[in-house]
Length: 138
Length: 336
Image 1 (cartoon, one colour):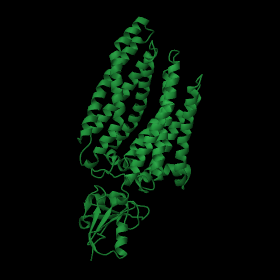
Image 2 (image 1 turned 60 degrees about the horizontal axis):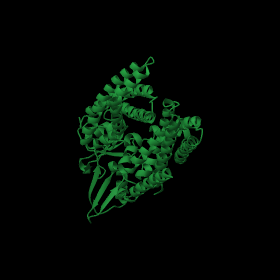
Image 3 (image 1 turned 60 degrees about the vertical axis):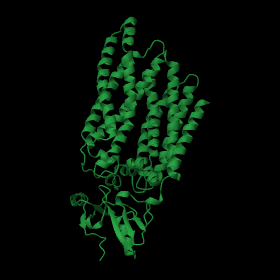
């Protein structure tokens, strides 16, 4: 009998821990503003709006797609160095288009690096090429 | 070398257990060789009395070594901010891939054997004449070699980390279409393996629970003939471990993290820390039948027969509970 109580207690506690983890997870923070996809932090692109709003995208492709589709009121774009996770101004970042797909849903192949050497190494390793800053506002 | 509070604790345990493991190996080998060749009852009793401290030391060291497995991962997690490119434990393991691979094989192996020895020691202590003493000492000398080797490798590993070493991110390995788990799944289940992997995971785990339940019933009943079922459960637990690992990378981790294209279990532990507990439950559950077989093989003696059956039954019960808990936790994450 004692054994059954122990088994029941372990199972109930395990379910409770898992439920607590699910309930307290902040899901809203991880969704892309363009396609609703979950955001992998190392590929995140943020667009800050003049009205104080912040849009978060799961990839460079999604952010570009949103801009092309008439995104307005952009104050600044922030990209993420996928090596260190550091947030960068696109003007000082290096962009590489390679065979490595960051998100199969969008098919994004554009990668962001802070260091030119890392960008070149990634391009060499994964049949890629360096791109100009895609967020240049004319 | 990267120094965090966890490095200090892990290194301290590794150095201490490494040195003591060498002492244990020398002492237990001497005791065993002294017993070999049919020592008299008096000689054996003397050896047992002399070995009291040896066994106590072994118990303390081996319990500490059991805990050092999860502690190693906590230490590696603490290195993430110091290694550019790493976003999780996987990146950290890429700083010294060869040594990391060796340690990740030695750790579970020593966890299994240490568990086996601790059970054998406990079983022997339940008897009046300690009939398993000789086997226990031989087993201890073998486990001590492994513990010494593992501790040495762990010290070399932790000391060899270079801060600011550039490493790769898990996404460039686990998220590629030709990752190992995807290739393995597609070669066994076909290209469209996706929908079949989770049912296979549940089927495999529930089959193991069923086998353990059957073994438990037989061991708890009179006669207790469960060797066949227990052996089948032990062999099946190896297969189940492989199925669980593949399902964890391919399906469970992306679902738990809500990142459908990210297949890294190390990131899963980071995003949902309770998944580390589910992983620990799965490991203990899969090790339980192996421990039961190990204790049945090493602890067989007329004086231990009653206890041995109870021990094996308890291990089956442990396996049922822990696999059940792991399945329940994973199911909650998959449903919500």
